[in-house]
Length: 104
Image (cartoon, rainbow, N blue to C red; front, side, top):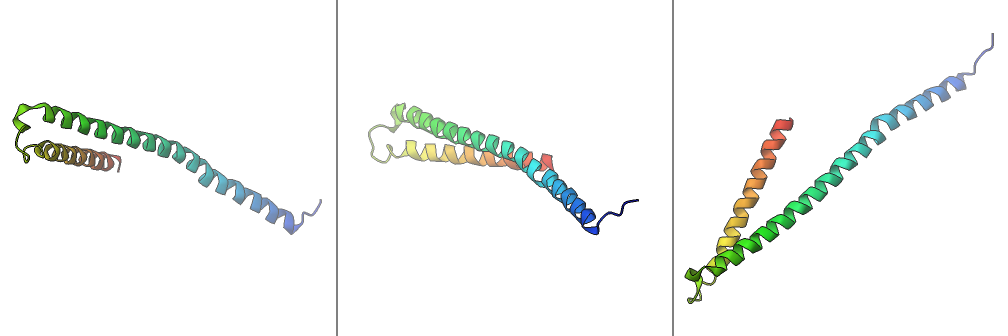
């Protein structure tokens, strides 16, 4: 019978621990990176959509003849657009919090 050195057992244990640590940390982080990238792309697309929708609402409200003439009336389309965008942001936040509750 050959005797094995106590250092061989320690080296084997070290290899096993390093392999386990890589398996449990690096691989999940790689898959997490995919979700992070998709989330970033999605949030950029939503931001672009909200901005373009806001511009569309502003342009639509400005075309209404009710807001022509008076200087204060010309400010109202901007206030209506800001109110609309705040409502959209609140709706998005509400939808995100509902989705987060469903995941848990």
